Amino acid sequence: MLLDVIERGPEDGNNTLPPVVFLHGLFGRARNFGFFQRRLATTRRILALDLRNHGSSPHGPMDYPTMAADVHETLAAHDALPATVIGHSMGGKVAMMLALQAPACVHALLVADIAPAPGGHAHSGAIAQALAGLHFPPTLTLSEADAWLAPAIAEKPVRDMMKQNIVLGTSPHWQIGLKQIVAGMTQVVGWPALPPGTQYGGPVLFVAGGASPYVQPRDYPLMRQLFPHYRLVRLKGAGHWLHAEQPWEFLRVVEEFLSVTG
Image (tube, rainbow, N blue to C red; front, top):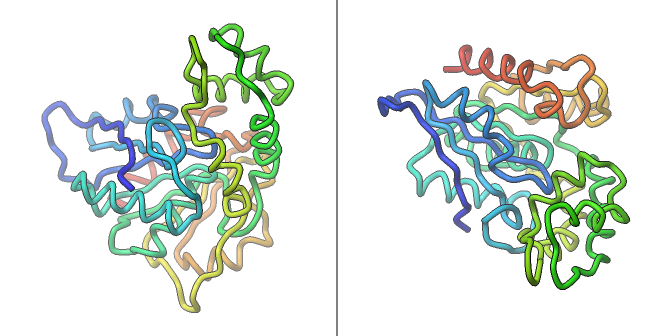
């Protein structure tokens, strides 16, 4: 499946460095990374992808091998391989799966606040079920959408994120593939069994939120098994949405990683 892509790059067209690819989390979309694209695109080609069932990309069944194959197909079509791949949460699992399935296509890997293990997204699963139970009114404006979402989502920042996934106006509807997301939540929360010896030997940086529970010491053995050269850093005080909570610090970590890996 070819995915929707937002691309930026240097004005002089200098693309000698490996492209950098951003993969968003559940209910996110490519444009969430606009701040980082603008900052990094002065020297590199930067692509942000809408994963399947998200943003402007097509809809279909969800599991990590399939979603990684989407990314591979899309980057190949854009002549953007090998690439440094940066993924947050669900996008981090997709990025890890891509590196494990097609290691020659991943120059380096940065995973933001998720581990290669079952877990995470449990709260999002409950949100998805609640959203599926909502019924759209005949018309809906942006200001009305907040109150409409409130019975399903208590947190204002999460409601603000979800509003970007609604086509507003007359006959409002979800732009995202909500039915497919709900059906695939078991796969999104989980992590598939991999053949013995599966491994990505390139440079890997896990960036965890210091106040987030998504990357735990119990995950370290599998992280080392799959990614023998990984490093882990924690952003003090950041939660799961570390790139939104501390964008400048996350940018600093990304730029440092790119300077080391090339």
